[in-house]
Amino acid sequence: MTDFDVVILGAGAAGLMCAITAGQRGRRVLLLDHAPKVGSKILISGGGRCNFTNVETRADRFLSANPHFCKSALGRYKPADFIALVQRHGIPFHEKTLGQLFCDGSARAIVAMLEAECAAAHVDVRVGHRVTDLSRADRFRIETDHGAFSAESLVLATGGLSIPKMGATGFAHDAARRFDLRLTDIRPGLVPLTFDDPPLAMMAGLAGVSLDTEASVGRTRFREASLFTHRGLSGPAILQVSSYWREGPVVLNLLPGQNAAALLLDRKRARPRATLRGILAEALPQRLAAVLAGEQAEARMADTPDRALRSLAERLGRWSVTPSGTEGYAKAEVTCGGVDTAGLSSRTMAANDVPGLFVIGEAVDVTGWLGGYNFQWAWASGWCAGGVA
Image (cartoon, rainbow, N blue to C red; front, side, top):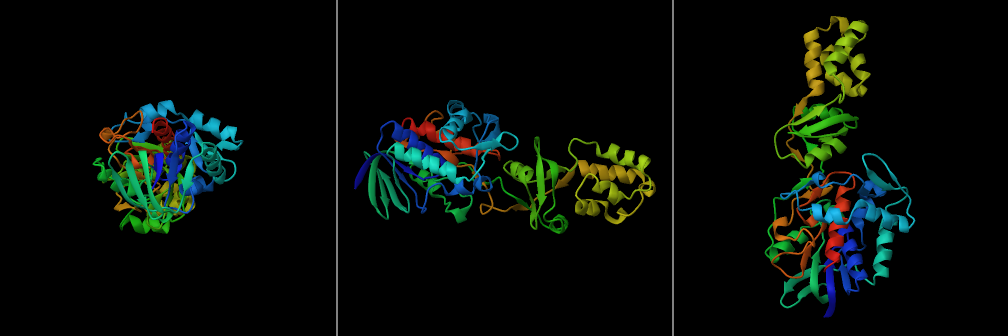
């Protein structure tokens, strides 16, 4: 059995950052992953360009049973810190929108950067190692299909259940239970919403249509694009509200920033000979305009009663649809919920009642918005744990 100071399970964003930080302190670090290579999710993120952080990161853009938990880590390792690392490695990047930073080239540059930092910190990285057992006496013992290892500190960084085709499993949750750490409710987050008929028939017929919307669940709302799919709704606005949705309606404003009633009534006065479908198509995708106009699609505006236009305007501004569910972990970008933060130190990510045990990244009950927030949580929580593990 080989001894280390720290064994980190999971070579994703959080695990890599933790390994680098611990290795830089002179700790003997072993980073294990069951996958054949490190950083698999990093490579597919951001359409292959890796949306590696968000310059507008704030604690109120994260979901958790304890909304204050993430403040310490995010305040101590900030987007500027990771940006500085990216710049030191000469990786070109740009801000796309809403504070989201992407590589100009491939996400492989970020993985290569993290691998280089691991090598410089003398981290022992071993992939293709499946953990078969965990235990703790005076030290942690990690059994794998390639032999056993022991360590003073053990870090759980194997993420959540999202995107199982990339190798995601419930390992971190099972390991946490083994050490008597509590879990919060776990569910898919940043995930497309599904519907049953009758709305599904209409949505499926519009599959591929995308438009700017404001989507809301209760008082939580996001203005970004929504996309119709064969199973319901997707797109950034829908993914955002999905993390907040449990049951009940999602409300869509199809003309955000506009007064739909005033727009339709003004067009009626100004262009009485225009068709309703034609007027709607000036503000909405044509296929959606035709569906919303319905049987009155070819009616002239002059022949359309004001009350009908006001009714249509109400739907345009507050279209309430009730999902039947979500696309699940197969399409979810993150896992909401995880290891209960009540059992962890917000400063170090250490388990309060299990000396030497740490939980970081997506395995913790901290879930960020779409747009680089979850990467920033991975970097920050990994850095905090690596500083003391």
